[in-house]
Length: 144
Image (tube, rainbow, N blue to C red; front, side, top):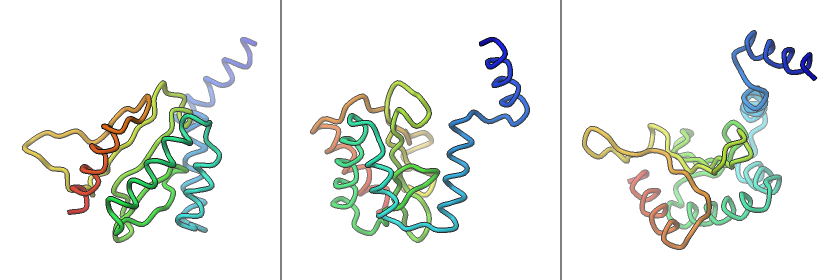
């Protein structure tokens, strides 16, 4: 067991990337070659564990309703939404990088600027009706 652990550490030390990060990079390369938009997004959601799948399905419906201008796609293997080819927001399930919560986040293309500092990522342990209202408002603002 110690040999496996040290071998795994040496791979990370050599590349600087975890196994999950290497998988995400491979997914991104595949997306650039064969991106199929919403079909890829729905396939990624279907692969998620039930808790995250439920959140991702609800967020997908919410984003489509709040900002129809956003195009569904995947980004590093995560459900994402783009405007003019640029990802504006995305959903990262907790199992993606083995974190204790999911994340709904915005890229620098989102128009969320508010003063000199504003939040761009939100941790989600569950998705409430109140959270959905807030996410919908943020998505609308992001594309305004």
